[in-house]
Image 1 (cartoon, rainbow, N blue to C red):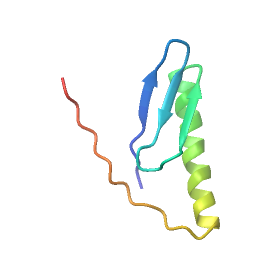
Image 2 (cartoon, rainbow, N blue to C red; image 1 turned 135 degrees about the horizontal axis):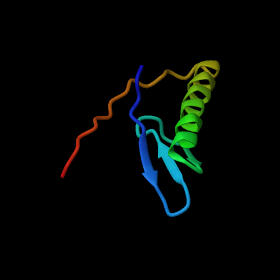
Image 3 (cartoon, rainbow, N blue to C red; image 1 turned 60 degrees about the vertical axis):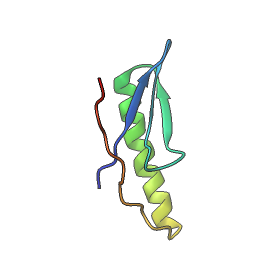
Amino acid sequence: MKYYVAYEQGDRNWSAYVPDLPGVAVAGASREACHDLIVEAISMHLDGMREDGIPIPEPIGEVVEVA
């Protein structure tokens, strides 16, 4: 499954979250660090859901660019 990740640059760091997985969010010093952290967070979150017998949600998000 592929989930969309939203990245945001702040004044001092980057953050990322997954709209289809509430609660999965990270912050890092750079976009690259943030990317590595969100990949790990998604993996850990899904592993925990599997261990707890919680169904894994299908991705339903959509990315649309608006000028």
